[in-house]
Image (cartoon, rainbow, N blue to C red; front, side, top):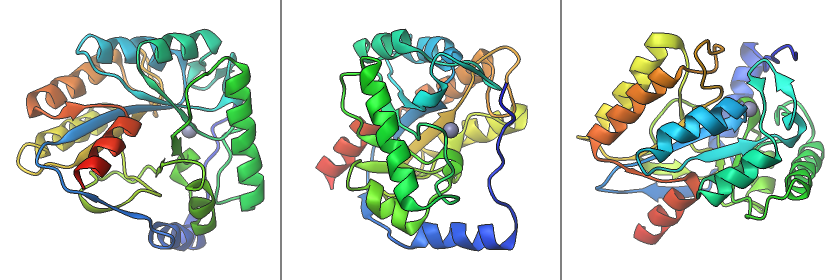
Length: 255
Ligand SMILES: [Zn+2]
């Protein structure tokens, strides 16, 4: 059982986070008159691959799973983690496998060279597990980024995701896409539902990110029922649901 790591707090970490947000922006326009929603799961627990995928698939939707291969086959505070069989099953159904870091490194806490080595190790490990699809999308662990890391990773990935709880609208940074959590208990899920409702009058690209999907979730997870509530709200909004890579392609084509 791993103790959850908490990224840097305090004034310096806050300033660095702001700096990472504004420096090395790679702008893209999210101008869409038809809202897009992407569901993503980080790390990722087997419950996300099973209960999470089932919730999406029954509506004909697919999600993006940001894999940390260092967790594969193991048990963390999120429960049992994904394995090679999950990669195979998810990709065969059209879900996207995205890249996290191998050892769930905090990108703001290590030199960029160390981060890149860990990301490359993740890509090699996923390939060794039988993953045949390209890794197009990357998510920063803890949402922690630096300008140098953003720049370096965009040479390998078409988009990078953070965890700032906003909807991507108008001028957006493809090097730090914003995303709304599927956690935080009833209050957090109510905010996630509200985000979907807001798409009706004000379209944009809403990316959700979650972790475990189980009856007794961690503070970073949700119950299958809570995921259903969010899916219901998304369906009612009329948004198109697609993986992060598909959404990006659609938005780039419309730009
Ligand atoms: Zn993570």
